[in-house]
Image (cartoon, rainbow, N blue to C red):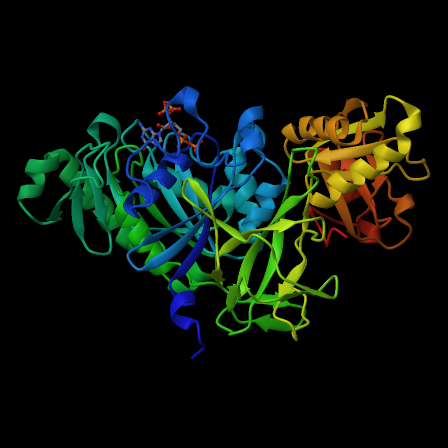
Length: 532
Ligand code: G4P
């Protein structure tokens, strides 16, 4: 047994994914409430105009009223040490959001029961599925009018391509929501609305208890008995191995706002999900329970204060124990350093830490030495974790400096911001660097890019939106990529390493190009290899 097994075993590191407004913040808040990390609802997110929230922890972001951070929160619950990785929604959506998922061992997917699978859920799910991490579904807002639960499960299966296995089953919805039937314990948890208490009050009765008809009415009882039989006959078998490999998603129904079903969900989830998972470094599998420390950088947060070009690098501890007093080895730079000011987020506060264990996320002061994907390990070790993929941007701009004499600063600034991973830059083949194409996952990044070039590099920009929405890496093609048959609406660009990529305006256009070039074995990918 390793020296730190006890500490590592109790860690759970997961991301919460959803489309905006499905209830991710509300659910996170209830988790923190149960863990005692906060003591009243509304701390993570206040009412409408006080949306500041724990996520917007960088002071400068608060001043600017935007959040470009995916935040991390740690709290304790029932002996577990839980790290939640938040994935921002709406306009803050960025490539960082995808990269954050690389640091998680599992994901909780929150679905609005009235809306089902929505676009952002689909995008985030795809990235989780690529890594085969376990995905748990919480179908939220059952206290409102909801879609038929069978239909919702079917949609998850058809749209996302993952099998589902309901763990509990809702009885009615909206005003008629009576609770859930626990399909494994064979008991009903009766719903009573309770917005502010620590846990919802629940009455438990068995399916064959005569009291049941009194609680939920005879019609609902009969319907439930029928549905329970149907589920037992037709539903996917609960297979823990399939859950662990991301092939089967356990589904829970509840209502985060009224606290219903949240604590049972958290408890089941913690039991079903895994302790920190091992990671590949080339041919080596690095065991999280190994005594030696290792980690990788998955996100770099720039300091918006132009007087300080320093940044914060976010690192996922992958194995062993991180000790702030000890030197670590930066593999890509081949140097030993002591990391300065390591810090962690505990609900609303940031604090300097002395130690962290596999599964934890820490932020370290970065004077410009880290790149996304860098490996940090105990001196004496020399492996590199597999690179973080590059995700396809969805918005593109042609960009050049207003003043042509500022070309040098423009290139320097654009390259530096691209290195932090906030944007991706592409060249037009055979053209100079007078102008570049900037690609982003969320449009807010255009504003950040413009703001930073002006404030940090003193360059005003001319930006022109381009009508492309899809970028694809060329995975294989028999011949010179220049010869790929493409319509007028497809543009070829080049990345830093000279790789050729294709820009498309529509999905059908991708299919058209694939079809026209199938004899030459054209394969396109939504994910690029290592960034640098
Ligand atoms: P998000 O982080 O996924 O974007 O969603 P968030 O938790 O902010 O929730 C979005 C809205 O949905 C909020 O209402 C929230 O109160 C509501 N909500 C969340 N869970 C439930 C639920 O289980 N039942 C019901 N009925 N509503 C739920 P809002 O009006 O936009 O904000 P607020 O005024 O409540 O702050």
